[in-house]
Image 1 (cartoon, rainbow, N blue to C red):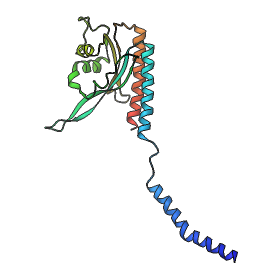
Image 2 (image 1 turned 120 degrees about the vertical axis):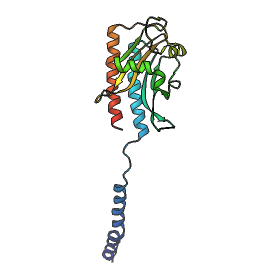
Image 3 (image 1 turned 90 degrees about the vertical axis):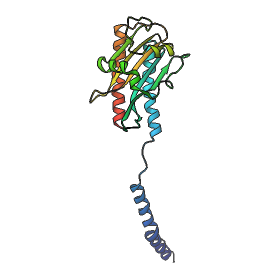
Image 4 (image 1 turned 90 degrees about the horizontal axis):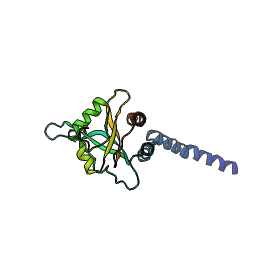
Length: 205
């Protein structure tokens, strides 16, 4: 009797439960869940960048270190042509210094065409003293006045493979500050490091 019961149970498992398990596995294989959480990935990425910015700010005694990135900002109404814009995507400020990223968001490149052209051609803009009118500020003096910045040093971030400019790394000082050659080399090396990381991150998305 016990043996007969065992045979019946095995038959039920084989005939009903077995195919159900197979169907369950097939459904899981045909609809795999994403192995990565895009929000967690973005947070992890941002933490790496912010760590780099804080490192730069501390090493160069800056008040604010930031990264702006170029992006598509929508289309024109008449011809559907893409608008070229930039936004401050990352920012690290010394305690007591206000953040300005919300102000420099979704801005047309055309508003800062002179500074953008200088970055593209020379790779950097060094402004040790905005009040010195013998120093070209490439149209950035107005922005410096609105943010109480006296000195700015910025370096272009260029994509590894095609050398296209993807953004700008900058450091601001609320008091006049002249960086020496060694400090400028450090800033440029950090910019290259961040550009490489951003290039790899953007190409993997």
